[in-house]
Image 1 (tube, rainbow, N blue to C red):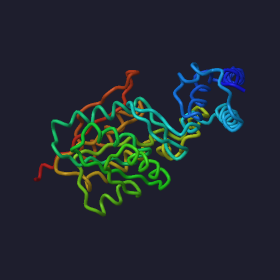
Image 2 (cartoon, helix red, strand yellow):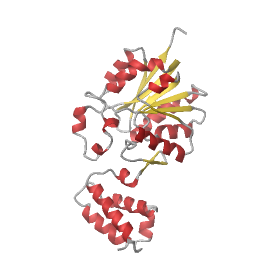
Image 3 (tube, helix red, strand yellow):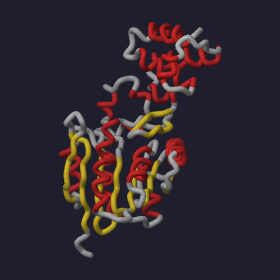
Image 4 (tube, helix red, strand yellow):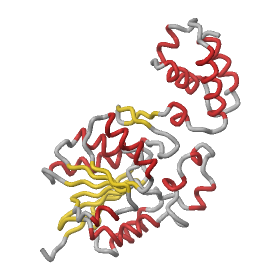
Length: 282
């Protein structure tokens, strides 16, 4: 079977699904380790049985709601390719807003210590380090399997990032690390909202999506613990659900943080909250 024929067959199988020609081409190009344009230029090329079997298996996985990124094992984000698998949340475009807001502090700090809580696949610290090489990046991640993916991405992109496999801030406090900037894209979906998610999204790690009964557990914990890991003046940047801005701001303000700004995503939804800590006693 050649490239043209197998893609036609796949397109037919995908006709009554949300997927189509694009996803089929991405899967086949990945198996061949080629760009998609190769498939069009060489559409009469015969495929060996191993590729055919793998392709047909991958198409079935797609039909059964396995995310395309988990099938190919990679995701493009901010012009870079990252390894992803079932142990990590798939990077979203909206997370770019968080990155952009962090980079606005380049004029504020010369050699900052920047801490990410819950790094996931590690995409944010990688791109941040490439755009702010003077910064010292430190990340935490509770899942050993997830952190393994992040460390592979750090190595792949040749960036020096210190990582701790720990719950929340445990190892940061144990090592007396004080940060200038803390950021996170935490789990913020409520248990009720989770039930309404697409089946494909539910294939992603539950713990990376759901932030407790009301989706706010992470923010409450951060409000209680941030004071142990910040310098006298520091900033906290958080991605949040579009309906959570007011309540998250209130949670953090009640623990002494000052509101700096709320920034919207491309859909004009509240997405990134920026808060400031100042120790007036020093």
